[in-house]
Length: 409
Ligand code: GLV
Ligand code: MN
Ligand code: MN
Ligand code: MN
Image 1 (tube, rainbow, N blue to C red):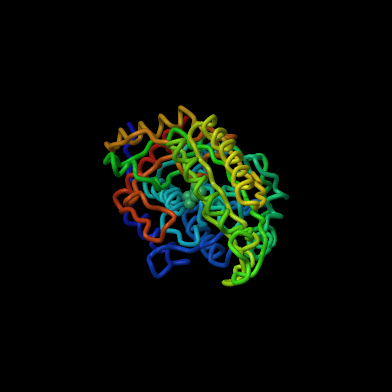
Image 2: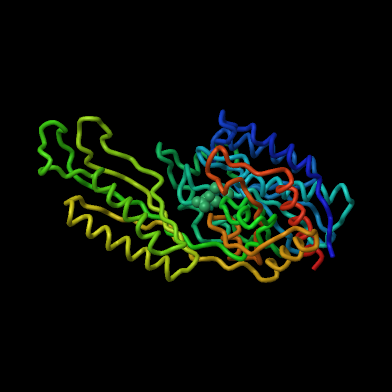
């Protein structure tokens, strides 16, 4: 039985300190990947990790690796980590909790003079959010081999800035190769970002896997023309057609419950009050825990697009640019999380991750699982995202005990 405890005040203070970097008026956080604020967050993190005795390395995609030595340095580390980047209107906890929980584990091991056989390594993965540069989970995706390094470095943001240049600019284009990473086991701690733990009144989610995702760019081409002189029956309005497509995304998700479908990004061209919109660029995000259902949603989307095209005369190009299948986490790691929660007396339940997480890609090359904690009203990707010190303490204590158990095996 392993019942080690962490320093809850220190964890909370670190969360609040990091939240000041990019802190918003509404109490959230805006620290987009590879901006000056991301650089500041990374530098503070490295300072804290070095003060806790970790050696720090940065790889070619900007992932930060902080290692607490083990007794046998020939052994693969037990890993943990998450991300420091946020959504444009993000909260204080999404991602940040996972990297600071990792740091608190190292600090607690130091306080309690605990030596582990395996080293313990914390990863701060680059651009998990996929908001400024799409898709998401880029740092872990490059390390897992799902993405090529060059293709990711060449990704551009909406202003045409290249990811590789931004990485250089903030000083995080590191020397360590992205290949050859190994973990004896990997755990990511994260707020749930959904309503289920709160609804069931559980302190810990034992995450058994993550749902699959399909991301698309859709381009709708109509015809720009004058808002006052073009009779209604002679219009080819791309924005109007896009409303039909948005409705279809909603219908498809509802027809494939518990699937999700979202249009979150849209650009209207020319975006002028008195010109009928000729072009729309929009994102579509489909998710489902079952791959066959996700495929059925994909098929339904193509069919809906053909119908909208023939009904409106607007040409729609659908570009599927990111897919990953539902992920099943490693049984031993899942059991280690469940056992740690039970040993510590925390109520818990099994759960599937609705959001994307770096752990999903790490599970390609290492035994992996995740620990969820509740978040207030299940709301995340919102500045009001909230959780309590006690909930963070529980998640971090489970992480500490799961890591210590695996680091001895
Ligand atoms: C990232 O946070 C995602 O799940 O979309
Ligand atoms: Mn996250
Ligand atoms: Mn997120
Ligand atoms: Mn995410």
